[in-house]
Image 1: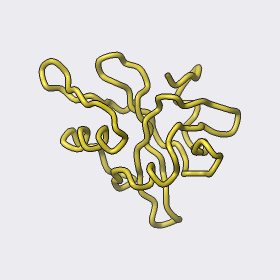
Image 2 (image 1 turned 180 degrees about the horizontal axis):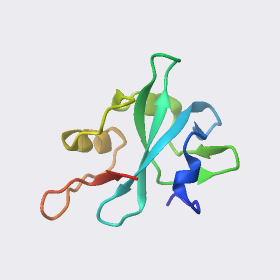
Image 3 (image 1 turned 120 degrees about the vertical axis):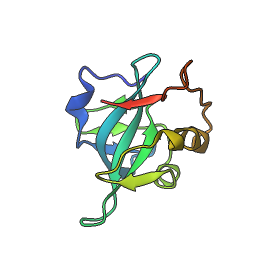
Image 4 (image 1 turned 180 degrees about the vertical axis):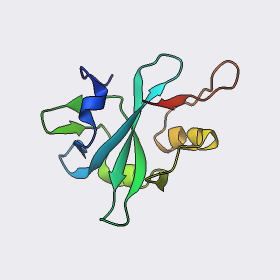
Amino acid sequence: MFEADNIRDWRDHDVVDPGGSKIGQLEAVYVDTSTDEPSFASVKIGIIGRHRLTFVPLDGATVAPAHVRVAYPKKQVRDALQIDTDGELAATDEPGLFEHYGLAYQPGADGERRLARR
């Protein structure tokens, strides 16, 4: 569980891996639509003028005054699905994103999306 008083306050904070290596900056938090709990974060990576967004699960994530530490290594996060900074996570991309991290994917009872941006 991602613990923070207000997850929106963490936008633009550094995201680091378990070893403390900077991955990028937190762009947004995606909640699980079945529980409304934080589930994934989009992370801005790349160099100025060539930024992209990648995604990382928030299970096991912790917050500190200057960063969010995720439970996944930098390489795995950077190898995950990426979209343009003004793009959207497509519903059809959700199963592959979960699979990349070895997580089970289950759409809603009526086939609705699993993730929603907050």
